[in-house]
Amino acid sequence: LIMRAYGRNYYALCFQNESELKDYLFEISKEKGIENIYYIYCEYSYIMEVIRYGIINIDIVNKKVTVNIEKEEKYIEIFEKIARKSYPKLLENYEKYIDDELEEEEVEEYEDKMDEIMGKYSLKEFEKFLDKVKLKK
Image 1 (cartoon, rainbow, N blue to C red):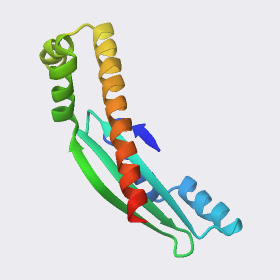
Image 2 (image 1 turned 90 degrees about the horizontal axis):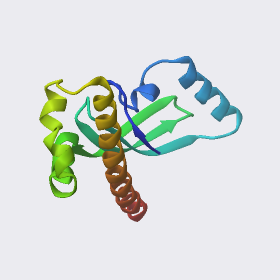
Image 3 (image 1 turned 120 degrees about the vertical axis):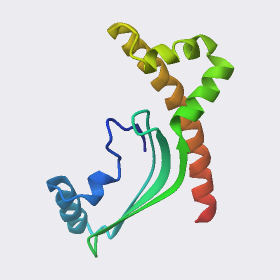
């Protein structure tokens, strides 16, 4: 599971906080005889300035959620490094983006391109993370 996190949310909160969805997940899983659910995930967010790789263990029997963030990276540092190497023109507009000097449609295009770049990077790193997790088991 790989996703872009929006705002200041982070994926694991939807399992840690009380919610109808979480209660429903526990109820359905218990009915199906499922005792544990594991999510291996990656999330990335410009706003939170982070890329996280982790494992969420949902213990259905004990109604307990454990979140292990196995690895964190600094989103902006990674983005700047990739942009410097492969997208120098994009990096030229980064200061304008930060200083809110781009037009609305330019901001949208910039964010789409940033998301595309970081999505590809995160997917590649997530695949490495999955291999590492497989080796541990």
